[in-house]
Image (cartoon, rainbow, N blue to C red; front, side, top):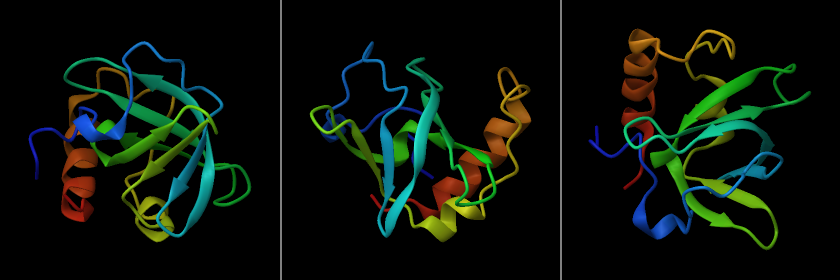
Length: 117
């Protein structure tokens, strides 16, 4: 696992402080939903994505290191994961994840195994 999983890749084109809420999120094989929440914290940057009807209204947390590109013009974020990898991610509770070190560890381990660098 890369030590930079919780930080944006330098080539992603994300500027800290940019409001990403509402941006569409694209997996390598199609759209997965829209950003509901995000964090630019130095050691724990992430996106919370509302998947809508795609996986029955589930929210997923994506570490910033999975983002390959941010297109501010089209308001789209591209991630280096398939829809299936995202669907199979650790169960996410959008109200309880903040400060939950165990959740961040298991989520980081899961996405670290699937990350293409």
